[in-house]
Structures are given as structure tokens and as C-alpha cells.
Length: 278
Ligand SMILES: [Zn+2]
Image (cartoon, rainbow, N blue to C red; front, side):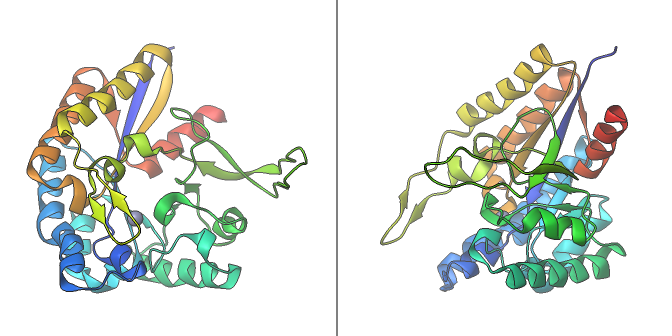
């Protein structure tokens, strides 16, 4: 069998929604997010175009309604538009009713932009609730990209786990929702975001080349150790869109391409996974 190694470039287009969800609404906090639609997004769209790549953009309803022109630019460039909540609050922090209302509200925004409801969902801050998988299936999602149970191999997400302290875990049944695994190590935000508040002091601001070296090695390891696999990189336009970091991303793309990577949207990667499984 011919070996095949897929890379999914994905962008969480949070803009200011994450700051607003955390109550960080002063002009300076907001400006950090505004950098995304204003400067980061156009650079990323140009970079993707330069290499002829299609990617997936997880966009919160808040961004879709606040920055409609920027979202239209992404869509018109041919990238997949997927779901990232409405307010950018993690599902685990919401009631079942609030979670479903966010799903429906942002999905209507996505349908207005693209003509279709989203096929994919990614949780803000990667924290699903016990209801999430069931709600995704109810609302017609094909895949989720919020869990870390594997690295290069998609799997089917479970519902109905029973987890109690001092008892062995009882896992629920796999569903038909495809899980496209992610990880903080191949996410730009924890490496680069500098955050200082009264309760948080996150240093970030890592040397972009060192982070890029890890990202390349994560691809090369997949190539060496699997016949078929998918590696997902997660980036935020307001984080990766700055000079040294976007140069790093270009180097990662170039090196992976030179080593046989096939780039595609998550929706297409999910379709390939399901076809192989069938
Ligand atoms: Zn996000």
C-alpha cells in the first residue's frame, strides 16, 4: 500500500471573542484580538495561496457577526468554515440548554455565510461537556476536533462515560462522530501568548524557530512510523500572524511538503478516513 501523510492546517479565528468571554474588554485587550482580522488573516490567506493549500477555519459566531467581511474573505478564498461556539465559552462551562443554543445560533451564521451548516466543530479552549457529542450528532455534525486521545489517527468519539472517583471508569459506546485529535503542543497559543493578569502569569513568547522544529519533528515522526496518518496544526490569526511566527509556519509547510505531506481541509481528511475504514 502506498504511504500517505496528511496535514490539516487549521485556524481558530477567535478575533476578540475569547477576550470578551473572559471579561477582558478594555481597548488594549480587544486590540490583541483585532490584530487577527486586520493583519493576521490576510497574511495567512496569502501564505496558503502561495502554496496552493486549503485549510479549515473554526470561527465563533461572535467573529462571524462582528467581522463579517473578514469571514467572507476566508470563505471566498476556498477554505472550510467550521464551528467554534458563539461566545467562545467552553461547553464544559455551559448548561446543556446554553450549549445547544450556542450551537444553533452560530450554525445559522455559518449557513448564512456558506449556504450550509457546519460539518465540523472545535471547542473553545478544548473542553467538551458530557452532552457535547450527543448534541453534535443531533445537529448533523460529521466530526469534532477537541480531544487528545490519539495523534495521527482519527477515531470515533464516545458518549455515556461514567467516571466516578474511587471506581473504575466505565466508558460509553463509540458514536459515528469522527474525532480529529489535536494537542496543545501543536497549537500556537500556549507557546506564544503572553498573558499577565492578577491571577495569571503566562510567559509565552517562545523562540518561533524552536517551536517550528518541534512541529516539523511531529510531522517527520508520523512519516517514519505510520503508513497513513493525519497531523493537525492549530493556529490563531492573532497569534501566528506576527512576523517571526508566520515565517516559522511557512518553514513548517515547506518542510512537510518536501517530505511528502498532502494538505487538505479537515472535512476532506474526515472523508478519506471514513473511506479507508469502510
Ligand atoms: Zn478559540
